[in-house]
Length: 265
Image (tube, rainbow, N blue to C red; front, top):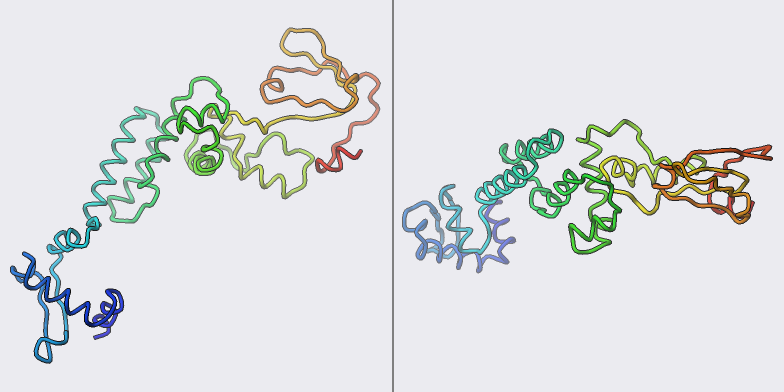
């Protein structure tokens, strides 16, 4: 009787449950075939027990306009297999898809399997041949330059952290040195470095200093930053192609723990 009580609460009361039971018993194939059997009491005005054969579930789902959970699981398995087929023989991403398929085939609920844009995004990452700015990548994949950063960056970082061959334990962004621990942790979580390893560059990756550093980009002329008395900022690409030349007249190098103190000093 406890189960009947739960069913009554679920459908909205005793009267609705009785009406639904009569309809199913008299107007469905499952009711006519005895796959759904209702034990009536008190001259068919109350229900003692409802027996339901598993094979009747698809018909009940159609009546309610919902997807049969088994059919949904099979649909998701085929969908994931299709996304996997697009990445060819890329080992690390195939392991990601195989893990999802393993859980689906075991009958487990896998919410990420229902998000096609997640798969579209990770597959696009595997096809990156040359470094691309994060917002350019986002515009290409989502037709929205900020959607990757807002909705998918952390999802991709989670996948890459677990499956990428480039990921190393405690990997953090190279621009965290001298920052407070909380700031470092935030940047670790942002995953900018592992994204960079896969060709997605972030505008947030910069190096900033004040002082008489001279450096050269590739084989170009020497750039003397001592004339930039209010500070110098270079981005990721510059940092990768630059090499220090001298620190003429510099007696001390200081690292400042956060941006506010850096600016005030």
